[in-house]
Length: 332
Image (cartoon, rainbow, N blue to C red):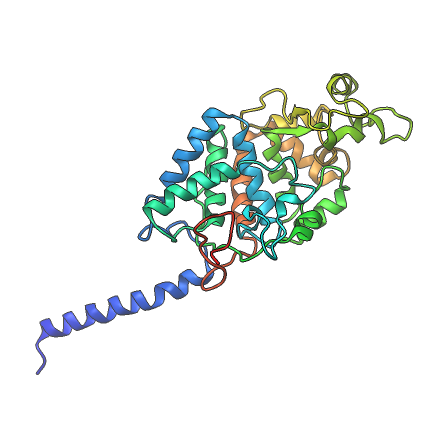
């Protein structure tokens, strides 16, 4: 008759084997916050440390890092493709209209990746670094926190055409932007909440000039732009020239993540057309703008949910893609 202690040992061994066997299968298709708990437990701390240092040096960097994650996920999903430089058969997304002359923060991602590679070689993806940096940038500027689902892998290529076509543009119509969100599995609530990221950061003159001079066809400011605000903008955004001149998206609290963005929209002081249309062209989005302007807590809660949802847009997992050693180029 088998000894009961031997049976117990056998059961423990079998249970451990099953756990090891099934863990990769679960990890292969699902993102979860604990993905690096055993393989690189210091990853999150490294990201936070580098981002904190970068934002302390340049407050605008928080918005730039948040924007990189957005622009990555809207093209081929959250796969780190925006970080690739042009080489061989890769045409970099950095050259696209939405990114050229405005996407920044790549050196910060490089620094994070270098530090993580020293701690845990070829373990943490560049796509996951983008997702963590976006969360940390939000928190550092006073916004909400959330547990970032992890386990993304990096793409082997980029899509310059996808970057030009899929990223919402400042001059797109309401329906065009909503369609771009829906194509990524994001709904009208996500559209309003994620637009709230414009509570921090800057925009270039070239991104809103048409609102100051051209929309009505007679050289007058856009009717949906408060006139005294328009006059101030014209002072540094002339009819021609000054394309790269920068303006705060939320002049009231440009480096603080709060609900001031929505209050600006109600006052017709949304800098970009793609912002103001949330208040002027759709009843549902207008109601959400009013609600978030009155209730920052609800905005924060929905923003966190929508960021998690966006971060889950068609990630590469399991054996798809790779873990790049350097975020700017594929391993080959």
